[in-house]
Amino acid sequence: MSLLFRDIELVELMQDFYVLTGIRIALFDANGVELISYPKGEATFCHCMRKNPEFLAKCRESDENAFEKCRQTNKLHIFKCHAGLIEASVPMIEDGKIMGYMMLGRITDKKNKVELVGAVMSRCRGYEAVPEVEEKIKRIKYRNEKQIQAAAKILDACCEYVKLREMVHPSGKRLIDSVERFIDEHISEEITVERLCEEFDVSRTKLYETVRPYTNGGIAAYIKHKRLEHAKNLLKTTDMTIPQISDASGFSDYNYFLRLFKQKYGISTKQMRKEE
Image (cartoon, rainbow, N blue to C red; front, top):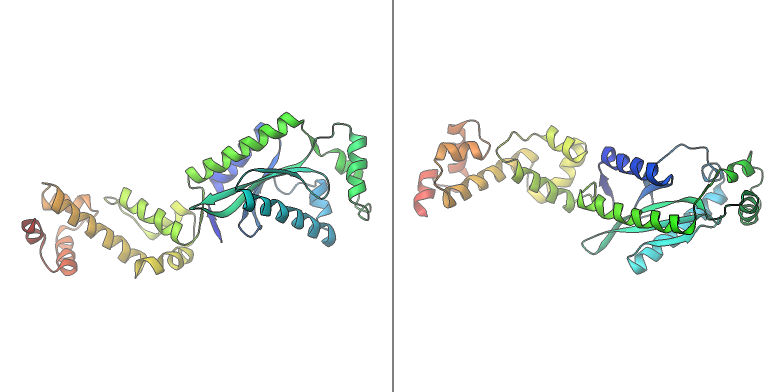
């Protein structure tokens, strides 16, 4: 399942999480592919070690084991990766299905740096050739048990907040639901493809490809359909004048509205109102 996400808002949330906890956070899709993280581009132990294909394979296996645990329980899972570092993953569930995961990690509960280096190196034999590997291990951030539990709970809360604010959602049906709701809420306003692309942070091509199966036509045709349905509802349920209904439904040209309405429903707006 592919995901759409509002990267600006999501990065801001990840930055806030990092300011509060000092711990890296990342978003993965349902297939375990990392989509976005903060901070990124650090010359950390994990970043350097992952350049080794064997080490990278073990990292991915560790992540997949964590995601499998999430799939089994639908709950937050705190664990140690293959290198002995502490991480936590949270399933992002929508309509009973996991659409992705949020993960924090690359921290340790070992305060003594010598002990930490020994523990990590014993798990990573064969990778000692990484430049300054011991110094990179020493820079792994320490958190005590209470701090780790607290950070994991905050991660869980962040996951719910992300879903509530719809920062992340599956491509496809979820997007068309959001587009439909947006049009309903802004029906009297000018709604363009450009505005929708900006609102949902998608390209024109992606928007057309996603929406087409659910609209039986293009974006403009779908918006027009929604406006006429809104006008029809107002005719049946309010005492608004027809020009007022035209404006409230987002039609700037009154005569154009009348012509479209009759084309769609086969009767005029006045006849539609008389039927009620």
